Structures are given as C-alpha cells and as structure tokens.
Image (cartoon, rainbow, N blue to C red; front, top):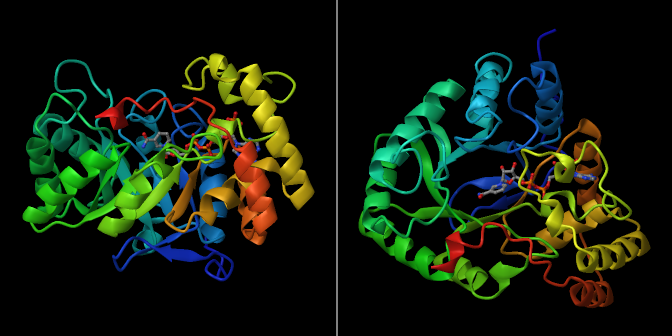
Length: 342
Ligand SMILES: NC(=O)c1ccc[n+]([C@@H]2O[C@H](COP(=O)([O-])OP(=O)(O)OC[C@H]3O[C@@H](n4cnc5c(N)ncnc54)[C@H](OP(=O)(O)O)[C@@H]3O)[C@@H](O)[C@H]2O)c1
C-alpha cells in the first residue's frame, strides 16, 4: 500500500532553530549509521522511517560509508526517497558526509578536494537525490590544508549540491578556523555535529562556547552513547546489541565495570524521574539549550517509540540536574576524539 504521511505529523514535535539560520530541526533527528544497510529488509527500514516522519522527525542523517557494506544505507534510502517519500522531499532535511574511509586508495578518505567532491557525487547518486540539505566534512584532516577542504565544500555549496555546510568532530580551534575561511568565501558554517552524552561531555570544555559565539547549530550524535545509556548492558552483553556485533564500533572494552557503575546510578535517577535511562539521556542532552537536535540511532521501532517519549518529560528540577550532573561522569567512550585533538 502506498505510504500516506500522518496529517498530524507536525503537532507533537518541537523544532529548534539551527544557529542563526532560518532552518529549524526537530528535537530528535534520526541517524542511519547502523541497522539500515546491506540486506536489512526495505520493509523494516520503511516502517521505522515512516513512523519517524509521522511523528515529526524531518531530519535523517547519513554518511557515505554507512552500511555495511559501505554505501548500502544510502542506496537503501534512495529506493525509499525516490518512491514513497518523493512527494515529501521538501519537508525533509537529508544530510551526508565525507572524510572517513569509503573506497580503496589514497582518495578514498580524509579531506582532499578529490575525495570530498567524488564522495558527495556518489552519495547523491546512491540516494537518487538532486541535492543534499546538509553536507559535512566528517572529520578534520591534519594532512590537508583546511583551505583545500573548504574548496571542496565551497564547490558543493555553490553548485547547489548541498544547501548548507557542516563539520563533525572538529575541535573548538579548528571550528573557528574553518568558520573564518568559509566566511571569507561568503558561506556561513551552518552546523557542528559532535558526539555528546551524559558520559561523553567533551564539548562542554570549550566547543559549546564557540558554537554559541559563532551562532551555528549543534546536532549532538550518539546521545545514548551507542546504547550504553540504556538498561541493556547492566547485567551482560545481550545478543542483538551493538556491543555483540563484530562490525560495530562499540567495542566490548568500553563497557567497563566503572562505566556500568555510572550507568547503574544514572538508571536509578532516571527511574526516580519516571523515565527510562534512554529517555533521560535524550532529555538531558536537549536540556543544553545550545543543542539544536539530538541525533539518535535505533535498531527497532520499539526503541524509536521509547525514545520519542522522552519529549514528554524534558524538564529537570534544579535538584535533579544537580544529582544527575554529579553522576554523569566521563566514561572515556569518545572514539571520535582524534578528530577533535587538533
Ligand atoms: N559524525 C560522526 O562522526 C558520527 C558518529 C556516530 C554517529 N553519528 C550519527 O549519529 C547517529 C546516532 O548515533 P548512534 O546510533 O551511535 O546513537 P545512539 O542513539 O547513542 O545509539 C543508538 C543505539 O542505542 C541503542 N538504543 C537506541 N534506543 C534504545 C532504547 N530505547 N533502549 C535500548 N537501547 C537503545 C541501539 O543499540 P542496539 O543496536 O545495541 O540495540 C541503537 O542502535 C548515527 O546514526 C549517525 O547518523 C555521527
């Protein structure tokens, strides 16, 4: 049966303005890093995407290499956006990125013009799109002049292949630098995509100040710390979880006794608030008013439903916030920190 979007799709979601732009993003955006690639049945992908859109999630996030295999998530999405979601294209913000390993050889990754432009063209083809809404430099490249990375982003922007330009996991210093170079070419840096969660608070050191100063948006990825901020790892590593999946980046070694202790305490505080830990983790990320959107991932429709319910309890009392902030200790789980170390 042909998909028809829910007429009330904009009645439950709240939208925040992205920096000083004219664009609003939903409080919760959906990323398709895991669980939407390869031979995952299109019917399952559709079920999750349509439900998300029906609930007002207008932003779907991709990268060239989401899968496995690399590229397959964008290809799967291409099948859906070119048919069922086609008439809703103007209601959607679709993003992709280049910078991590995508194809063999010296041009298959990092920040050269050669890599970024070819990768963007490939993403558009796979997704059967004329343009992306946001295109990101996925990571800072210490071996390519930032001017060259900006050359590529400028070309993508000025040729209309992307409407807005973003960066991911750049340090505060490099964010300032790329902002200035883009500005000198009459391009406003639109958004930063850093990792951020109750147990990964690196952006609070100085990046959030920079984001505020530059008036750019901030979409926080992995707000559930890849699933660690739920009750699933409290007693063991279950099957059907990211940590048990050999192709994932959630290494079992990150689920330390110390981290489980932190998660147990956060789980207790979430229960006290009447939320699940996953819900509290999302509400907490969104309590930082610099965060435009929480960029979540899901394995199932039920996870999406549970996570969307976090929007029913976004407020924290002063005393809740105080206790949670004490319990929310650094978990050393930021596997993207190399990119922000420059
Ligand atoms: N820019 C970058 O470098 C970068 C890096 C990473 C991610 N991202 C973007 O951010 C998006 C989100 O990242 P992420 O998937 O790591 O985010 P996340 O929301 O922190 O983790 C998602 C995982 O958490 C678990 N989960 C979700 N809801 C749950 C629930 N209600 N109860 C129990 N477990 C739950 C699931 O893991 P199980 O599969 O174990 O069930 C799910 O796959 C990605 O899709 C991508 O778009 C960007």
